[in-house]
Image 1 (tube, rainbow, N blue to C red):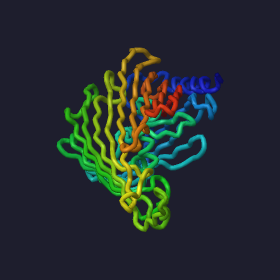
Image 2 (image 1 turned 30 degrees about the horizontal axis):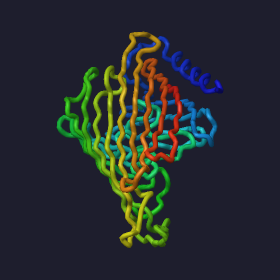
Image 3 (image 1 turned 120 degrees about the vertical axis):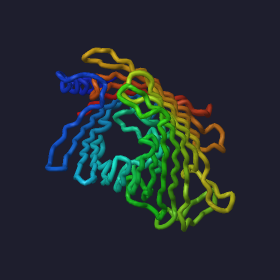
Image 4 (image 1 turned 180 degrees about the horizontal axis):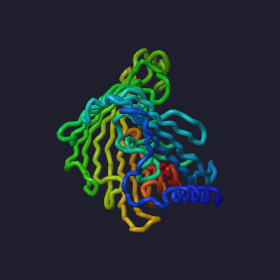
Length: 383
């Protein structure tokens, strides 16, 4: 097995530990440098570096590979008067791009209006920042295995993740009840492809009182999203069941989510989260009724870790972690679902450095397909 990636991962972890040397340890969220620009204005800077290596049991690809998974720089500006702005750039192995770019107006701590490119309020697993994930990847990234799981399916079909639009967030009941909703172009981070647009809304309620530094929250949520596909000016002709259909108008696919989360990132003890998501699959359709209809999908996601502090100055905490993701792209068909299981181990070197070890196991429902696996490791540095 090549040693290139383990060496790189060790160097990244060592660099982070040197940066943290002499600083107070503990599991609080990391602080980021702030640059004062003048009265009522400030600029907060944040960096994120993730280096990853992974194997694959798929015969058609190389056994081991490594990559620069994420290198992000984020600037959060306070312009005064309740106006804020966020810009996040991402430098990966193959390209550089802008991820978040939005303006926000906050007349109070209970209300915010956001305009630009950002994540829509659907799929709680996607809404968790990549720097706080309990396992390395949100969905299937076994190299050479073209199988969707819940989060990757939603992202690929622009039903979650980043989009361009406007969103309103309001908080009530002493901030225990949060309502979020808005409208987007519906084409993700790309230019608009058709006249269909996207709407999404989310409601979350903190069952327990709002958490303090040592208390755990219990949050319940529901969400819905709908997005338009096909129609003018592109993708107007589709061949379905041997029939050619001309789609002058967009066809809308909708999805619904039930969400629960108990615990808090970097807080000792249990932290679990999961959801049930179901709706229309815009990749699968039939024309038996004389018009195009979407098939239905079902996704079940469950994540968790149990954080144990060490009291040490180098390794400050460690946590066994686990993920289960059952995804069925067509609930009306047999033997097309698959289950992704991921046992893992998280090692925390203070709040800014994390090393994760995962074993991804994809179990297809069909006996005609093989079980595929990947050992994955990732080193993360926040600065």
